[in-house]
Length: 427
Image (cartoon, rainbow, N blue to C red; front, side):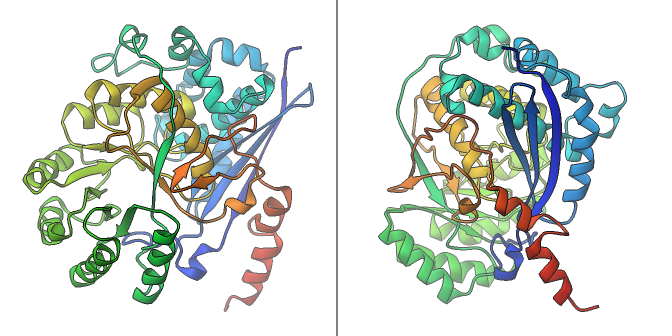
Protein backbone atom coordinates (compact mmCIF):
# COMPACT_ATOMS: atom_id res chain seq x y z
CA UNK A 1 0.00 0.00 0.00
CA UNK A 2 1.44 3.41 -0.94
CA UNK A 3 2.29 5.64 2.01
CA UNK A 4 1.10 9.16 1.18
CA UNK A 5 2.50 11.86 3.47
CA UNK A 6 -0.47 13.86 4.74
CA UNK A 7 1.01 15.89 7.59
CA UNK A 8 4.30 17.43 8.76
CA UNK A 9 4.73 19.02 12.18
CA UNK A 10 7.82 20.66 13.67
CA UNK A 11 8.55 21.69 17.26
CA UNK A 12 11.26 23.74 18.97
CA UNK A 13 12.65 21.49 21.73
CA UNK A 14 15.41 22.75 24.01
CA UNK A 15 17.32 21.40 26.99
CA UNK A 16 18.92 23.84 29.49
CA UNK A 17 22.41 22.28 29.35
CA UNK A 18 24.04 25.68 29.89
CA UNK A 19 23.08 25.45 33.57
CA UNK A 20 25.74 22.77 34.05
CA UNK A 21 28.19 24.03 31.42
CA UNK A 22 27.62 20.82 29.45
CA UNK A 23 28.78 21.30 25.87
CA UNK A 24 30.80 24.41 26.63
CA UNK A 25 33.79 25.24 24.45
CA UNK A 26 35.90 28.24 23.50
CA UNK A 27 33.26 29.68 21.14
CA UNK A 28 29.98 28.29 22.51
CA UNK A 29 30.20 29.17 26.20
CA UNK A 30 26.58 28.62 27.21
CA UNK A 31 24.87 26.15 24.83
CA UNK A 32 21.36 24.90 25.45
CA UNK A 33 21.29 21.71 23.39
CA UNK A 34 18.20 21.85 21.17
CA UNK A 35 16.48 20.39 18.14
CA UNK A 36 13.98 21.33 15.50
CA UNK A 37 11.94 18.13 15.81
CA UNK A 38 9.98 16.94 12.78
CA UNK A 39 7.23 14.32 12.55
CA UNK A 40 5.74 13.26 9.21
CA UNK A 41 2.58 11.16 9.04
CA UNK A 42 1.12 9.04 6.25
CA UNK A 43 -2.41 8.06 5.35
CA UNK A 44 -1.38 4.50 6.17
CA UNK A 45 -0.84 5.37 9.83
CA UNK A 46 2.96 5.35 9.68
CA UNK A 47 5.15 8.08 11.15
CA UNK A 48 8.70 9.21 10.45
CA UNK A 49 10.78 11.22 12.92
CA UNK A 50 13.61 13.63 12.12
CA UNK A 51 15.60 16.37 13.76
CA UNK A 52 18.37 18.85 13.31
CA UNK A 53 20.63 19.97 16.15
CA UNK A 54 21.10 23.54 17.40
CA UNK A 55 22.41 25.13 20.60
CA UNK A 56 19.45 27.24 21.72
CA UNK A 57 18.60 30.67 20.35
CA UNK A 58 17.90 30.46 16.64
CA UNK A 59 16.07 27.14 16.78
CA UNK A 60 12.89 29.07 16.06
CA UNK A 61 14.44 30.22 12.76
CA UNK A 62 15.11 26.62 11.73
CA UNK A 63 11.51 25.75 12.64
CA UNK A 64 10.29 28.46 10.25
CA UNK A 65 12.52 27.06 7.49
CA UNK A 66 11.14 23.54 8.03
CA UNK A 67 7.61 24.90 7.68
CA UNK A 68 8.65 26.60 4.45
CA UNK A 69 9.89 23.25 3.08
CA UNK A 70 6.85 21.26 4.19
CA UNK A 71 4.98 22.01 0.97
CA UNK A 72 7.52 19.96 -0.99
CA UNK A 73 6.81 16.91 1.19
CA UNK A 74 3.13 16.81 2.11
CA UNK A 75 1.10 15.19 -0.66
CA UNK A 76 3.90 13.00 -1.96
CA UNK A 77 4.05 9.24 -1.39
CA UNK A 78 7.08 7.62 0.19
CA UNK A 79 7.38 5.40 -2.90
CA UNK A 80 7.44 8.48 -5.14
CA UNK A 81 10.22 10.05 -3.04
CA UNK A 82 12.53 7.06 -2.70
CA UNK A 83 11.92 6.01 -6.31
CA UNK A 84 13.75 9.19 -7.34
CA UNK A 85 15.52 10.22 -4.15
CA UNK A 86 18.15 12.21 -6.02
CA UNK A 87 15.40 14.19 -7.71
CA UNK A 88 13.57 14.77 -4.43
CA UNK A 89 16.82 15.94 -2.79
CA UNK A 90 17.26 18.47 -5.60
CA UNK A 91 13.64 19.55 -5.25
CA UNK A 92 14.30 20.52 -1.62
CA UNK A 93 17.70 22.10 -2.17
CA UNK A 94 17.29 23.71 -5.58
CA UNK A 95 13.89 25.39 -5.65
CA UNK A 96 14.30 28.41 -7.90
CA UNK A 97 13.36 30.85 -5.14
CA UNK A 98 14.21 29.20 -1.81
CA UNK A 99 17.75 28.25 -2.83
CA UNK A 100 18.59 31.97 -2.66
CA UNK A 101 18.68 31.77 1.15
CA UNK A 102 21.19 28.90 0.92
CA UNK A 103 22.05 27.36 -1.34
CA UNK A 104 22.73 24.11 0.54
CA UNK A 105 24.11 25.87 3.60
CA UNK A 106 23.05 27.56 6.80
CA UNK A 107 19.54 27.49 8.23
CA UNK A 108 17.91 26.18 5.06
CA UNK A 109 20.29 23.19 4.98
CA UNK A 110 19.68 22.43 8.65
CA UNK A 111 15.96 22.42 7.90
CA UNK A 112 16.53 20.20 4.87
CA UNK A 113 18.39 17.71 7.07
CA UNK A 114 15.54 17.58 9.60
CA UNK A 115 12.96 16.91 6.88
CA UNK A 116 15.06 14.32 5.05
CA UNK A 117 16.04 12.59 8.30
CA UNK A 118 12.31 12.09 8.92
CA UNK A 119 11.86 10.68 5.39
CA UNK A 120 14.71 8.22 5.88
CA UNK A 121 13.31 7.22 9.27
CA UNK A 122 9.90 6.61 7.68
CA UNK A 123 11.42 4.53 4.87
CA UNK A 124 13.38 2.35 7.30
CA UNK A 125 10.30 1.85 9.50
CA UNK A 126 8.17 0.85 6.51
CA UNK A 127 10.87 -1.68 5.53
CA UNK A 128 11.09 -2.90 9.15
CA UNK A 129 14.86 -2.28 9.35
CA UNK A 130 17.23 -0.03 11.27
CA UNK A 131 18.52 2.58 8.85
CA UNK A 132 22.06 1.17 8.70
CA UNK A 133 20.63 -2.19 7.59
CA UNK A 134 18.42 -0.49 4.99
CA UNK A 135 21.55 1.11 3.51
CA UNK A 136 23.67 -2.04 3.67
CA UNK A 137 20.98 -4.08 1.92
CA UNK A 138 20.73 -1.67 -1.02
CA UNK A 139 22.30 -2.58 -4.33
CA UNK A 140 25.17 -0.25 -5.30
CA UNK A 141 22.97 1.17 -8.06
CA UNK A 142 20.14 1.95 -5.66
CA UNK A 143 22.54 3.48 -3.16
CA UNK A 144 24.15 5.93 -5.54
CA UNK A 145 20.74 6.88 -6.94
CA UNK A 146 20.15 8.61 -3.58
CA UNK A 147 23.20 10.88 -4.05
CA UNK A 148 23.32 14.19 -5.87
CA UNK A 149 26.67 14.15 -7.70
CA UNK A 150 26.25 17.68 -9.02
CA UNK A 151 29.37 19.80 -8.36
CA UNK A 152 31.52 16.86 -7.18
CA UNK A 153 32.13 14.83 -10.34
CA UNK A 154 35.67 16.23 -10.55
CA UNK A 155 36.36 14.34 -7.30
CA UNK A 156 33.96 11.39 -7.52
CA UNK A 157 31.82 10.12 -10.37
CA UNK A 158 28.77 7.93 -10.13
CA UNK A 159 30.64 5.07 -11.84
CA UNK A 160 33.47 5.23 -9.27
CA UNK A 161 30.92 5.08 -6.48
CA UNK A 162 29.54 1.83 -7.89
CA UNK A 163 32.89 0.08 -7.32
CA UNK A 164 32.80 0.05 -3.49
CA UNK A 165 32.98 -3.31 -1.64
CA UNK A 166 31.19 -4.58 1.48
CA UNK A 167 32.41 -6.13 4.76
CA UNK A 168 31.05 -6.41 8.29
CA UNK A 169 32.21 -5.40 11.81
CA UNK A 170 31.71 -2.89 14.71
CA UNK A 171 32.86 0.64 15.55
CA UNK A 172 34.99 2.26 18.28
CA UNK A 173 33.99 5.50 20.01
CA UNK A 174 35.79 8.35 21.76
CA UNK A 175 34.45 10.48 24.60
CA UNK A 176 34.14 14.25 24.83
CA UNK A 177 32.11 14.18 28.05
CA UNK A 178 35.12 14.41 30.39
CA UNK A 179 36.61 17.74 29.36
CA UNK A 180 34.16 20.47 28.40
CA UNK A 181 35.83 23.84 28.71
CA UNK A 182 33.59 25.01 31.56
CA UNK A 183 34.35 22.00 33.77
CA UNK A 184 36.59 22.38 36.83
CA UNK A 185 39.77 20.33 37.19
CA UNK A 186 38.08 18.35 39.96
CA UNK A 187 35.12 17.54 37.73
CA UNK A 188 37.42 16.70 34.83
CA UNK A 189 39.48 14.36 37.03
CA UNK A 190 36.45 12.52 38.36
CA UNK A 191 34.86 12.11 34.92
CA UNK A 192 38.12 10.89 33.41
CA UNK A 193 38.57 8.39 36.26
CA UNK A 194 35.05 7.07 35.67
CA UNK A 195 35.60 6.85 31.92
CA UNK A 196 38.83 4.89 32.33
CA UNK A 197 37.06 2.49 34.65
CA UNK A 198 34.40 2.01 31.97
CA UNK A 199 36.95 1.05 29.35
CA UNK A 200 37.39 4.30 27.42
CA UNK A 201 40.75 4.71 25.70
CA UNK A 202 40.16 7.76 23.46
CA UNK A 203 39.58 11.20 24.97
CA UNK A 204 38.95 14.67 23.54
CA UNK A 205 39.74 17.92 25.37
CA UNK A 206 38.23 21.31 24.58
CA UNK A 207 40.90 24.03 24.20
CA UNK A 208 41.26 27.60 23.01
CA UNK A 209 40.43 29.97 25.87
CA UNK A 210 43.80 30.39 27.67
CA UNK A 211 47.01 28.63 26.66
CA UNK A 212 48.15 28.04 30.26
CA UNK A 213 44.79 26.50 31.09
CA UNK A 214 44.99 24.28 28.02
CA UNK A 215 48.48 23.11 28.95
CA UNK A 216 47.36 22.32 32.50
CA UNK A 217 44.24 20.45 31.42
CA UNK A 218 46.01 18.51 28.65
CA UNK A 219 48.79 17.60 31.04
CA UNK A 220 46.24 16.41 33.59
CA UNK A 221 44.40 14.24 31.06
CA UNK A 222 47.59 12.81 29.56
CA UNK A 223 48.92 11.91 33.02
CA UNK A 224 45.65 10.18 33.86
CA UNK A 225 45.25 8.19 30.64
CA UNK A 226 48.94 7.34 30.24
CA UNK A 227 51.15 7.40 27.14
CA UNK A 228 49.38 4.72 25.09
CA UNK A 229 45.81 6.01 25.02
CA UNK A 230 44.60 8.53 22.44
CA UNK A 231 44.17 12.25 23.11
CA UNK A 232 42.52 14.75 20.76
CA UNK A 233 42.01 18.50 21.16
CA UNK A 234 39.21 20.71 19.84
CA UNK A 235 39.32 24.52 19.48
CA UNK A 236 35.86 25.01 17.92
CA UNK A 237 37.09 27.61 15.37
CA UNK A 238 38.81 29.78 18.00
CA UNK A 239 41.99 30.90 16.23
CA UNK A 240 43.40 32.62 13.17
CA UNK A 241 45.69 30.45 11.06
CA UNK A 242 49.03 31.61 12.49
CA UNK A 243 47.68 31.57 16.04
CA UNK A 244 46.45 28.01 15.57
CA UNK A 245 49.87 26.79 14.46
CA UNK A 246 51.61 28.50 17.38
CA UNK A 247 49.07 27.38 20.00
CA UNK A 248 48.95 23.74 18.88
CA UNK A 249 52.73 23.61 18.67
CA UNK A 250 52.76 24.54 22.38
CA UNK A 251 50.42 21.61 23.07
CA UNK A 252 52.41 19.15 20.94
CA UNK A 253 54.23 17.62 23.97
CA UNK A 254 50.92 16.09 25.02
CA UNK A 255 50.80 14.20 21.71
CA UNK A 256 47.32 14.96 20.42
CA UNK A 257 46.21 12.86 17.45
CA UNK A 258 44.41 15.85 15.96
CA UNK A 259 43.43 19.47 16.42
CA UNK A 260 39.75 19.87 15.59
CA UNK A 261 38.32 23.03 14.00
CA UNK A 262 41.46 25.15 14.55
CA UNK A 263 40.10 28.11 12.56
CA UNK A 264 37.06 29.24 10.56
CA UNK A 265 35.21 26.16 9.28
CA UNK A 266 34.98 27.86 5.85
CA UNK A 267 38.74 28.49 5.46
CA UNK A 268 39.86 25.59 3.30
CA UNK A 269 43.28 27.03 2.43
CA UNK A 270 43.81 28.01 6.05
CA UNK A 271 43.24 24.42 7.11
CA UNK A 272 45.68 23.31 4.42
CA UNK A 273 48.33 25.68 5.80
CA UNK A 274 47.77 24.42 9.35
CA UNK A 275 47.88 20.80 8.19
CA UNK A 276 51.21 21.32 6.45
CA UNK A 277 52.72 23.11 9.46
CA UNK A 278 51.61 20.49 12.00
CA UNK A 279 52.48 17.41 9.94
CA UNK A 280 56.12 17.29 11.21
CA UNK A 281 54.71 17.20 14.76
CA UNK A 282 52.55 14.19 13.94
CA UNK A 283 49.35 16.15 14.58
CA UNK A 284 46.49 15.96 12.07
CA UNK A 285 43.68 18.42 11.43
CA UNK A 286 40.04 17.41 11.79
CA UNK A 287 36.94 19.34 10.79
CA UNK A 288 33.47 19.03 9.31
CA UNK A 289 30.79 19.48 11.95
CA UNK A 290 30.10 22.95 10.51
CA UNK A 291 31.01 22.15 6.91
CA UNK A 292 28.02 23.25 4.83
CA UNK A 293 27.85 20.68 2.06
CA UNK A 294 29.57 18.03 -0.07
CA UNK A 295 31.22 20.70 -2.25
CA UNK A 296 33.18 22.08 0.69
CA UNK A 297 34.24 18.59 1.72
CA UNK A 298 35.38 17.98 -1.87
CA UNK A 299 37.64 21.02 -1.71
CA UNK A 300 38.99 20.17 1.76
CA UNK A 301 39.97 16.75 0.43
CA UNK A 302 41.41 18.05 -2.84
CA UNK A 303 43.53 20.58 -0.91
CA UNK A 304 44.83 17.96 1.59
CA UNK A 305 43.45 20.27 4.26
CA UNK A 306 42.03 17.53 6.50
CA UNK A 307 43.53 14.34 7.87
CA UNK A 308 40.23 13.39 9.54
CA UNK A 309 36.79 13.99 8.03
CA UNK A 310 34.02 14.75 10.51
CA UNK A 311 30.61 14.34 8.93
CA UNK A 312 27.51 15.51 10.80
CA UNK A 313 24.06 13.90 10.60
CA UNK A 314 22.24 17.24 10.65
CA UNK A 315 24.63 19.84 9.19
CA UNK A 316 24.71 18.14 5.79
CA UNK A 317 21.58 17.34 3.78
CA UNK A 318 20.72 14.17 5.69
CA UNK A 319 21.80 10.67 4.67
CA UNK A 320 21.87 11.54 0.97
CA UNK A 321 24.68 14.07 1.25
CA UNK A 322 26.56 12.15 3.92
CA UNK A 323 26.75 9.20 1.52
CA UNK A 324 28.51 11.43 -1.01
CA UNK A 325 31.07 12.58 1.57
CA UNK A 326 31.73 9.04 2.83
CA UNK A 327 32.48 7.89 -0.70
CA UNK A 328 34.75 10.88 -1.43
CA UNK A 329 36.67 10.37 1.83
CA UNK A 330 37.20 6.73 0.90
CA UNK A 331 38.54 7.68 -2.53
CA UNK A 332 40.97 10.18 -0.97
CA UNK A 333 41.90 7.64 1.75
CA UNK A 334 41.05 10.01 4.62
CA UNK A 335 39.44 8.37 7.68
CA UNK A 336 35.95 9.46 8.72
CA UNK A 337 35.54 10.24 12.43
CA UNK A 338 32.06 11.75 12.73
CA UNK A 339 30.89 14.55 14.95
CA UNK A 340 28.22 13.49 17.46
CA UNK A 341 26.84 14.46 20.87
CA UNK A 342 24.30 17.24 21.04
CA UNK A 343 20.70 16.04 21.03
CA UNK A 344 20.23 12.90 18.97
CA UNK A 345 23.46 13.12 16.98
CA UNK A 346 24.84 9.92 18.50
CA UNK A 347 21.55 8.16 17.80
CA UNK A 348 21.68 9.20 14.14
CA UNK A 349 25.38 8.88 13.37
CA UNK A 350 25.64 5.30 14.62
CA UNK A 351 23.79 4.24 11.46
CA UNK A 352 26.20 6.13 9.21
CA UNK A 353 29.37 4.74 10.80
CA UNK A 354 28.10 1.18 10.56
CA UNK A 355 27.27 1.66 6.91
CA UNK A 356 30.66 3.31 6.30
CA UNK A 357 32.54 0.36 7.73
CA UNK A 358 30.38 -2.43 6.34
CA UNK A 359 29.89 -1.05 2.85
CA UNK A 360 32.66 1.48 2.17
CA UNK A 361 35.84 1.58 4.21
CA UNK A 362 36.23 -1.83 5.90
CA UNK A 363 39.02 -0.14 7.87
CA UNK A 364 39.21 0.91 11.52
CA UNK A 365 42.71 2.40 11.38
CA UNK A 366 42.43 5.82 13.07
CA UNK A 367 38.65 5.61 12.75
CA UNK A 368 36.39 6.40 15.69
CA UNK A 369 33.15 8.21 16.37
CA UNK A 370 32.51 10.88 18.98
CA UNK A 371 30.27 10.04 21.92
CA UNK A 372 28.80 12.44 24.47
CA UNK A 373 26.87 11.06 27.43
CA UNK A 374 24.00 13.57 27.48
CA UNK A 375 20.24 13.47 26.81
CA UNK A 376 19.96 9.92 25.44
CA UNK A 377 17.21 9.20 27.95
CA UNK A 378 14.83 11.36 25.89
CA UNK A 379 14.79 8.91 22.94
CA UNK A 380 12.65 5.82 22.43
CA UNK A 381 15.66 3.91 21.04
CA UNK A 382 18.70 5.45 22.74
CA UNK A 383 22.20 4.68 21.57
CA UNK A 384 23.90 1.74 23.32
CA UNK A 385 27.60 1.97 24.20
CA UNK A 386 29.45 -1.06 25.54
CA UNK A 387 33.20 -1.23 26.18
CA UNK A 388 33.62 2.17 24.48
CA UNK A 389 32.02 0.89 21.26
CA UNK A 390 28.76 1.71 19.52
CA UNK A 391 26.53 -1.37 19.35
CA UNK A 392 24.40 -1.72 16.20
CA UNK A 393 20.84 -0.45 16.76
CA UNK A 394 18.17 -3.08 16.23
CA UNK A 395 14.90 -1.11 16.12
CA UNK A 396 13.48 -0.11 12.72
CA UNK A 397 14.10 3.50 11.68
CA UNK A 398 16.78 6.15 12.08
CA UNK A 399 16.61 6.32 15.91
CA UNK A 400 15.18 9.86 15.74
CA UNK A 401 12.00 9.36 17.74
CA UNK A 402 11.86 11.22 21.06
CA UNK A 403 9.63 10.46 24.02
CA UNK A 404 6.43 12.49 23.78
CA UNK A 405 6.80 13.51 27.43
CA UNK A 406 10.29 14.91 26.75
CA UNK A 407 9.09 16.85 23.72
CA UNK A 408 6.17 18.39 25.60
CA UNK A 409 8.04 19.34 28.79
CA UNK A 410 11.03 20.78 26.89
CA UNK A 411 9.19 22.55 24.09
CA UNK A 412 10.24 26.21 23.93
CA UNK A 413 8.98 28.48 25.36
CA UNK A 414 5.74 26.97 26.72
CA UNK A 415 6.89 23.56 27.97
CA UNK A 416 7.00 22.99 31.72
CA UNK A 417 10.81 23.11 31.98
CA UNK A 418 11.10 26.43 30.14
CA UNK A 419 8.01 28.00 31.66
CA UNK A 420 9.53 27.44 35.10
CA UNK A 421 12.98 28.69 34.10
CA UNK A 422 11.66 31.78 32.34
CA UNK A 423 9.43 32.61 35.30
CA UNK A 424 12.52 32.64 37.55
CA UNK A 425 14.62 34.72 35.15
CA UNK A 426 15.35 38.31 36.25
CA UNK A 427 13.50 41.08 34.45
